Image (cartoon, rainbow, N blue to C red; front, side):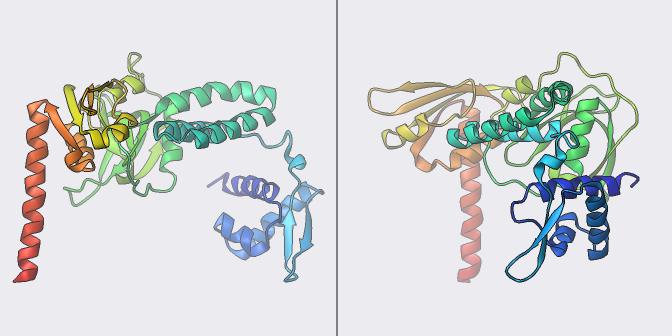
Length: 335
């Protein structure tokens, strides 16, 4: 790539200024993902640009190079994407009830804003706000699959610039990945990450799993964004991520689990009622019946689905299917 060497040089400068003990040449190479000779050339180029760059020998007589942070003042600015990522992480922590971590992340974000040059901050603030709006937090907790390198960076640029992207998408029911031109609007986190986008020239918004996007490339043109679309409103329609017609849900948690249930945010629309017998009733309106069932399994017999019948029936059917499946496994082992 044309700018790859410059990007590596800037990355090395940031890294050397951000470490107290400095880096050896081998650590520079590992950090940049390059060979030792390339790291050596980058180090020498950086040293010629910044006379303040220095090295010290550690206890093993290895040279460790360091660049004072003051050398980068006015040269390298904090990226809007970095600030938005920290603030999005703070919002995720709040969703999980981790208020202390959220406060620390917001403190880090404020510190980064404070060290930015006023003109750079002024230019970046619209991008930070746009990225924050475009990266929502879905409600379902859980581990996250691996996302291909570079995909998120490209998608964020596409969202900011309102540019379509060409993606190679791994459809599990097909032998070959599909190629699609997508118009991206935002990203939802929670469980698997999801891109909210519609196919070019088709208005229907769909969800695309981030871990199934094998590659993403910007197209050098724009697209007309649907002005009435709100990522927050779109995400709020569902219990998790899957978009379905919303249903009215009533859950009753037994007295032993009442305090735990009262401390959960099942959905932003929820209403919690304390019953006279110590139980807790939770009401909310959302779509995503299957995701509700997945979560309700974690509560075991501490919860009863009072409404609707559709949710109660599907939860029972899934429980029977799981029981039958594991029963078959035990029969095979016993035989």
